[in-house]
Length: 173
Image 1 (cartoon, rainbow, N blue to C red):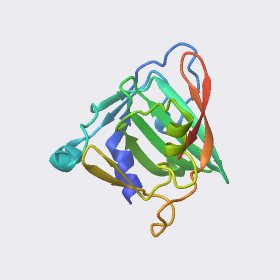
Image 2: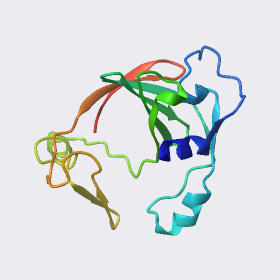
Image 3: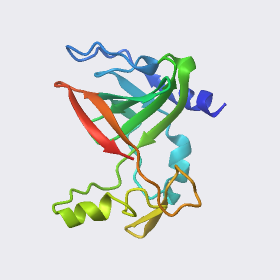
Image 4: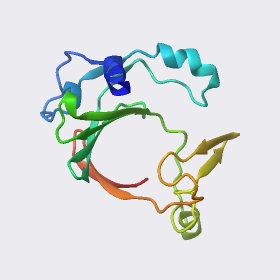
């Protein structure tokens, strides 16, 4: 039911894709296409949110895929303002295979410059995998893994991202 509602929030445009962009994801999205989002529900809650809302239109400038195995694939659509629309599909990429749609905005970016800084972020008991994280007076709770555990081992996956020049990146979640 929630997925049907979320699918209704997004509508693709008829914009032509960028040259060389022939890969199409769920809901007909691909590089060069735009997604319009009805942000009214979020705007009503904006005073309670710890972030600024993205634009109501996301123009796709990057398209990433992650094979999660077992027939599940993450499709990630990026814009030039660091907003990401993530669509989880099972056994295909048509609308009936969509299981989850999430919209992400980064809170901050961190680039560790020493081994000690890397260990603080990545490793046994480090910040990545912690049950909660504090930043700028806000506490964020982890939404995956056993909620009773204070730390879980992050999962690593490879995302293939297509832009003007293809690249791949390894992400720990």
